[in-house]
Image 1 (cartoon, helix red, strand yellow):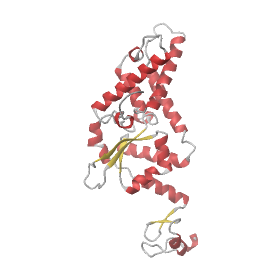
Image 2 (cartoon, helix red, strand yellow):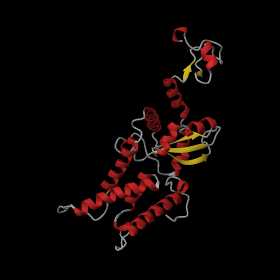
Image 3 (tube, one colour):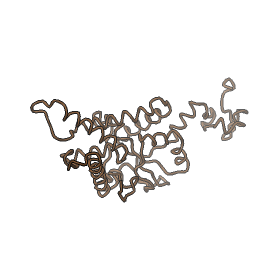
Image 4 (cartoon, one colour):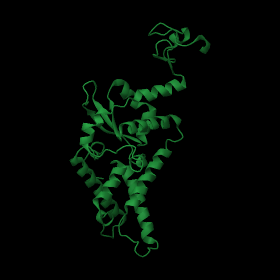
Amino acid sequence: MPYQIDLDKSLVVENSKRDKETTISYFTQFINNRLKYFLPSYDIDSSLLFNKPKKLELLVLGSMGNPRDFGTMFFNCWSQYKAYRSGSLGQGRPFKFISENMIIKSIRDDGDKKFTNIKDNDKLVRIWNDLEKFAEQKKSSHFVIEESAENNEALRMQHFSDLFYHRLLSIRKRHVPAKDSSVENKLTVCALSYSCTYEKHTRDKKFSFIVDNETVHDRVRRYVYNPLLILDELRIKDGELFPCKSCGEKINTLKMKGAWNTNTCPYCGGKIYNDSQA
């Protein structure tokens, strides 16, 4: 679409009231352009499909401002709508607009499809479950990660980059000042996928889905997630890391072969493992 905005930075409804208005405007025009392209002989626009602003907002929120996801979910809604209108409309039952149930189904279908992309990868699923657990503990869909060198490297690793690629996890804002003075680095605000967690934040009420900047500013900046912890768990399971039995420091068995082979901890000088484990 010929729209002079930065899609990665501007289509984030929780950033500000202005960004929300920009996002809604963008996707309203998105729909109108699609309708004009595929139905050029009909004078119709988004108002003939969405009779209430909240319905369109729900679809936008479900896509988290991602044009590709929005397009997929809108097409899902349109397909449901066409099937309904071309079918037998019972008395007292017909409606003229895309219904909320159609939108919810399109959101659920999107979440199911995203999770299907990772469900056969045990490590990705374990990281995703860890993220969901953290969200439930904090009662929040959004959280922050310190922008340290170690964390930045962790997020570039395949496991986390795959979650970003499949859009189960998204970055909402970078370089945000920390809320607590004890946190030295700037923060990156991240969020779990709205569609992949739909049941958890709607039906089960495991956490709230954040839709406003005030909550991000007041609460979310305190929810600091450490990606290194779950990555270390995976490395320990794979045998790449081994906690020293003497002091607990993690020994990288691939990079610290000398220490591992001589069973001497470089941190405390004690034994890394019992001789029987060699």
